[in-house]
Length: 303
Figure 1: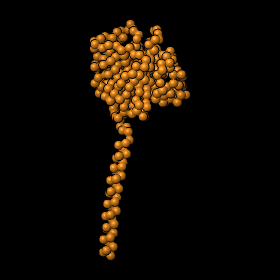
Figure 2: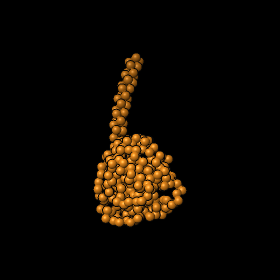
Figure 3: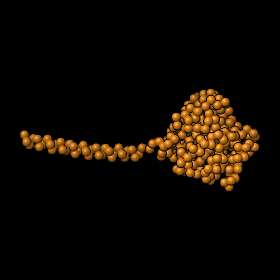
Figure 4: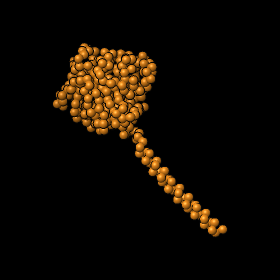
């Protein structure tokens, strides 16, 4: 009986040892697999920590303001209204922005450049883009003053020009430098294609039908995954031909709650639905953040 008892103990010890080895190996395998999985932990504001690029469509009401971050480099496209100054500057502080490689004012309307002068006043800026059209408004003149005070030169975008930002790049899609959109300032909007590996974004300001038509002729591949809806989701933008060329998965709409223009228009939302495009609205979701790692894209919101 004693021998059988010792044999049982020996088997128990052997089983325990084998279990321990297996547990350690399983842990190592699990850890190794986890190292291969993408890190999707969220940062403040809904950004993805290991993303190549985070595109923040800031909730500035019935206006546009977009912060783009890649590998510690920053770009701002539009600066909301003059009343959005504190909202924008506080958001930039929250995101630990220290300087801008690029600042773009898509076109001279107040709801796009209203607080852009304050951003330029507050941060070092390497390059400023404005379209080749002027305006007589006080807001536009204040923007020019801030640019001059920083001894910056205005870069007029040219279609197909390319620039680097951190781990990504962007290409100018519009406006067509040979076109004359007259006083339709929306069509003068600078249209940008942001490229992150297999993932891309089209950010089109307030571009309407004429500008979208010219973009289709630009020679730039407009296929994208994320589309910042033109003109706050107005029926004057996001034409079917443009949507067909882009074929985005997501549309991000910057608009104010109960705005007087009724943006986004139901016609546009119906188009998005018919094209199988999932849309997010700042008036419903607050600030919207699209993040990508070159292969996949996720969309998060503050609400």
